[in-house]
Length: 261
Image 1 (cartoon, rainbow, N blue to C red):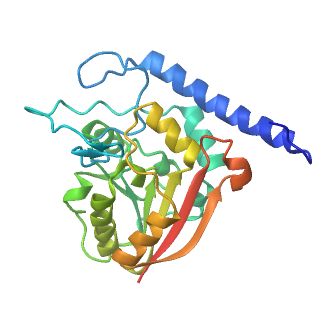
Image 2 (cartoon, helix red, strand yellow; image 1 turned 90 degrees about the vertical axis):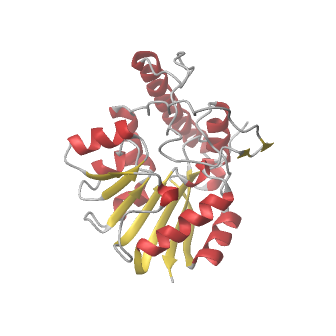
């Protein structure tokens, strides 16, 4: 594709960032010995385990799936992102997270191995992966272990902010709406729900690599969530690049800031 008006430099930056992240993922997947539920070496590690962001496994975006027979296999161990990937994400990519208060008023929903805690170590978190939770607790961080669809273990109005970073796309719409209602419960009146989801390129990349993407979240889904669960959409924007450039970049996000009514 030809780029006019000096945009070849922008394209080269996109390709460089993508290649840096891809090399880091490939290096860690080769060295980590990550294994799937059946014990066979996986082609690549998932961003989150299904235990971390539980979804309704009876349906997928392709339609109904056969119900599993017998006991469910243990969830795979969550992949731990490396230093380079964390640096690129916290410093260059998800800048909205750096604008939040750096105190206990923030909840990181489905926090995984917790790169957000490198920005705000005073935050609270919750995740369903016991290995990730144990790792974060060993660092002295305030992280709860639990299934977020079973309810959040905090009192009403506990937080000023709830962050869902690369989370909503792992849920079907119906459980996602239940989760959003629970997020509203733990937010103080006027509190904010900050949502970061992958763009189309990033979502499709996740589908190809089997990281558990179930729903491509757009402004339409966010508007539905806001209307049904008692939020107002305050802002919607791409990050870190404008959409015309971000569509070429796997790691560009769509960011939505919702206010609790």
